[in-house]
Image 1 (cartoon, helix red, strand yellow):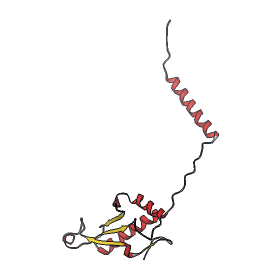
Image 2: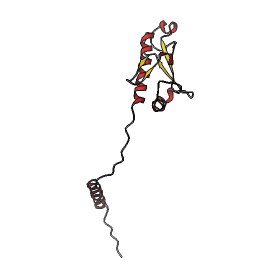
Image 3: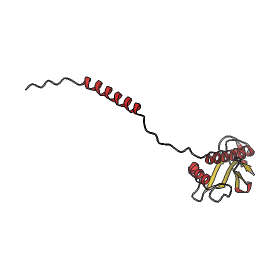
Image 4: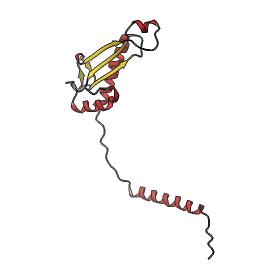
Length: 141
């Protein structure tokens, strides 16, 4: 079991890890050893996640999630396979933790009477400054 929050835990059978060849640094090691990790997690069919967490996770994941609801995380920062594996799992945990937080409900507020008065007086002051910049009209009739 992978514990994410006190209420959310994911079974290791829900996660599929594929080891692929990494790009980048490593010399010949890059060409020989599959050190990068591709983690796959089926978000839409996971029994561990509630409906709210699932919908927030899909929104948060963005392009990392396929049209079938499978979250794909690739980790290849490190030269060791085990460190990349742990990095991918940590990134999954972080994403699910963020999705498990309920967003704060926005409470609409109105500006106070004093704030409206300050705003209007500032506008009047600015208008007066601009009026003073105008040229004097000399209309001879």
